[in-house]
Length: 547
Ligand code: F6P
Image (tube, rainbow, N blue to C red):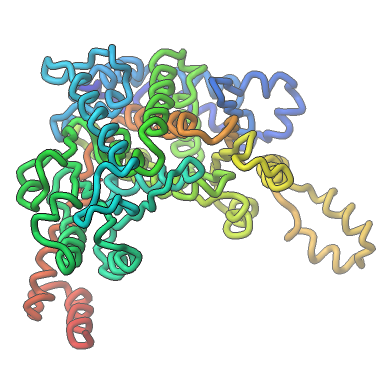
């Protein structure tokens, strides 16, 4: 069944939130903490290895009650049931949205068009397992009989970002294979990777749901051409495998049908790392670690499906984000993991969040008259502190920030970890409390600054504080906790799309540029510029003249 259709601004909860916002917009978190010593216990959630503290937000109990009312009025419960049951909730592409089925238990029954998909999912998982093990123990060999040493994932968007993010995140768990990623159609990218490879010992995994994506096909052809300089045509079948729904195109490329890993149209590219799209993850860290990643995601799925909304981590984080996006007018959110391993988490979630919820037409087919998708950005701490934290602390914009940290480091270097985590805690405290005039003045007095100098400097050194943060503190970075973390954000995206009454699972917005690029490519290749606006024509002519 289709999703319900409710403009959130017409709900009673929205109107109450609007009124409530007028009372809360100048509320001070520090004051609220001083007045209520139950605040931390009220506003945190403990689940498995996760502690999510959301007490450092500009909220009180009424805010949360009203946000939860909003979730109820926009029929979130009904939508969650449809999401997990395989209903056609991606209505504009007439598809179910079932990445959750990829990590479901083998005993589950999840139907698409009346057919249980779980047996197929497990068939592909077993294929990934067998293939991974054969490569790892050296049973699968290259055309000169040598075992593989290098893997190259060729794909873009969801066929790249998930695998590269996870392979980097789980580097600690990695085995002997070197894993490379080629995504950009920029020829310099592919050449830089090729430079590091030996054709005899490299396995290429072409990942493209459609197998029509220009970047991936161009890179695959360039790599095949390079490969054929030393190998023969029949060796292609040994060195190239593919993950795709388009079996015909894959076989036309020269890939042995036995080496095609299928996926399904009910898995969106940006949510596909749990499918065979994650083959390079399995190769990098071994199938058991890949399976644990899926198990962690499945645990988060169960939590999301069954926990009451006020105890439900994705629901609470999604509603808080709506509070800032739609009432405070925040435009972006930062995501700061305090681990270098998660350096690709923000780019990965940029696609997840912005390709999903960057929409301006409601499910009723009419333009929305409220804000939707947030902008996501971020870098690991503490590097981020030395780059853009100035703006979060003292800029004019309100940027709600998620801090993600781990209780235990992987290599057990206590000195480093204590320093890292002291920054993690200090930042959320500083963002909330800021620094008052009185404190700054007291420091000046201690330093013996002249009155004139102190008067001049004082406004620059004051921090207004009251900047909202969520703290997600996880026991340790493991395949399982990573799986749960990624699934948490996937469900946050889902909740927001439901409340905003948009379709989160299509991506028509990326098509126009692709079509125009194709016709401009013809012009570049024929060196004949057709009619364009004068700016584009001027740029193209300059490019062609100086090329
Ligand atoms: O950029 C649009 C997009 O369709 C993404 O959603 C997708 O992840 C990416 O292109 C790659 O598509 P494919 O896997 O079909 O090559």
